[in-house]
Image 1 (cartoon, rainbow over the protein chains, first blue to last red):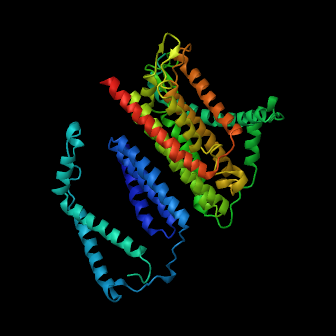
Image 2: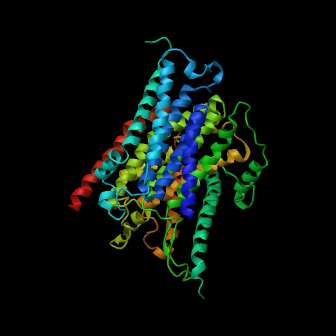
Image 3: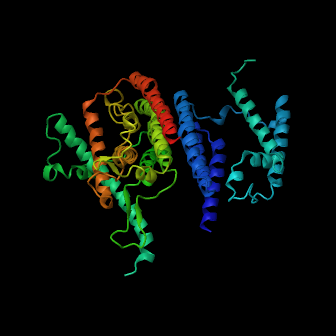
Length: 177
Length: 345
């Protein structure tokens, strides 16, 4: 029972912190919330009896990568993003390609919701826990990822692609082709 | 008398209590020791007015800080400014959680099974210490950024660059010892160093890893931001570096975290290289005495170094870290791996 409570606490922290990361106007807060989210994830790994993965998560992500993030944010002295110059018209009413992009984004949201809804028997383990050779086996993991969870996997990969394209678009300077 | 049913959880609680307070007291002793040794090295008395031989000086310091006003600059970020010192001190305490400091004991037969001296024992102990100390940099970086002051910001920037650079050499020197011991658990690393040759030469990893030990200590000094690597503070250039804008208890947390980090660094060095609680001529049942002696010696070297060696230039720090210390650590690791392979095969 205490394990369940701790699980829900950590899960709520991970999801809540991740959601707040995108809601922040101050990049510094986003970085800190991301670290909190990584910490909660590492707690979940400990609950899964994987202390090495948990510590690696802290060392690599929270310890090394996020320090680099912080360094960049501090060096660039990224300002608070203020919503003043933001175009507040509804995306569907905006001209040209924005409208189609919005439609595609809506489609992606529906897809992700479907994928989440289709994720059944998550409790079923990939392999039995005592069978140490298969539980960490890449084959088993890959098989389950590409058969039972194909749809969720593909929907997520599109989301990541969109994030990459979006980052490239935003980094491009105005007027540059 | 059968206390065992209740004695066990109580004993674990007592162990946490003792470790926590030992760290606080250790930082108080270090404040005094630092000023006394500094006085000795600079040929003056050091503190001598408060209590006999100035022994109560740390308490006077703490009282003074407690009664100071807490200031916060107008442009400072309210949340991060408060969070930064808390982060620094929490990570300092947590890092000690997996450091063992003594052999198993039943506390003179009070417990039905032996308790391990140390807060907890996990099978990836070395990595936990490393992970938590690497989180300590956030306290300093955030303090520097949230103060909204150019000196503090420079201190924070230097801290992050310095700690990323020296963490590599630090971790690589750790890895060599882990290879020798074949375990990530600090307790197992210590126990693999038990025994002596010819009755008086201890089987410490120091003899196998002299270069690794030196790299570990140097990287440790840089990780704890102590002179000659105290760039995040660098009084002559940055006023007081990352903690320029801090006062009162918030300020007190930074030096205390630094002293606790020093203790952790020395304790881990003792466990990894100096055989932990295995000391010749001291029985293992009171092995923690030997442990304390060794930790005390390393701490003395720390202070000695601070008041003897002047601060480097920043480019020298980076050159030394990347062009000398890290390659040396890598060579040490490869040589150790080759020798372990050769002798185990």
